[in-house]
Length: 408
Ligand SMILES: *Cc1c(COP(=O)(O)O)cnc(C)c1O
Image (tube, rainbow, N blue to C red; front, side, top):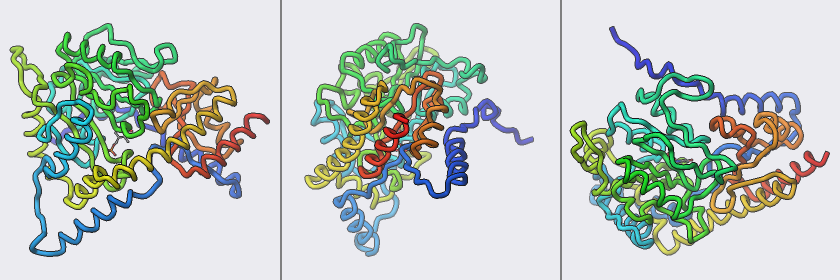
């Protein structure tokens, strides 16, 4: 008899984005003439940088000739891309990461899920709250949690991000073997200092834990005192895996390219307490189950490291950051406490009421769509996330509508 993975039955159906969609269509039916501005979803809106498009086109043309055609490439990614990443994203910031510690993939979302396959199933997992839902759900699927009870999964350690701790969770008071961290954070937009990140690395070293560090929003950081990579922190190479993506950095959400860094010195233990390098386990997993990102996409990604590419990518994130600054400024002026929006495209707003109530108010009175914070976890209740991914004109319009709505 074929049996199902019963862990899937523990999953809470995520009603977040379908609930939002339902409320939007109800609103549109009731008021067909009213304009709606979406500052809800975490997807970019502007086209790929010119340098990426040109490189993309050239690579497609190479595929059209027998002499330059490419079939299967290395599963870990072409060295032209891995070398550039090591040089520009790590060595240039004093992080000693080499090209062969970088694994190119088609997304940080799948990597953060797939990585768990190289760990034992009885480890204790610590996950932030509020959180990017992928971390939680993939652990539920893998059977690393108990049942869902009173808003939380049993057997997970929740790392609470609150106003009191500046949205940077405190070290857990109970053991945790696998720890997820994401900075700049989705959904809060909060960042972490080098000193605080050092505390996490030290905790991991003392407890023989591993940190999974998601740096998908690194390109939005402008405060140069903040760490862009966890490997800028002493000792991190032994206890951390880092995820990066071209999605938000260069508008690759529909093009698909990302990478995972597994330093060769990063270790995990077997039941006898013997050390094993995670690099060889991940290499085995990746080369067995993945056949590489398409050649033209890797060429397009490589182009962000050229002189023009760098300038264009910077312009792209500057554009969204200008939106973010306006959102934060206007919401603050209206009397709402905000975090994020300075080194991040997300603004986390204390709505001073139920998240969904605030969502409904913004939709009905201003025609603006945000994301209710409660959808990201218990600690998100009372907050909304406003995304800067839209045109500046739409953001301006949205803000003046919100201003009108609130002052009514
Ligand atoms: C958008 C996002 C990613 C990127 O995912 P891709 O699969 O590379 O598009 C990763 N982590 C977080 C927290 C994100 O918000």
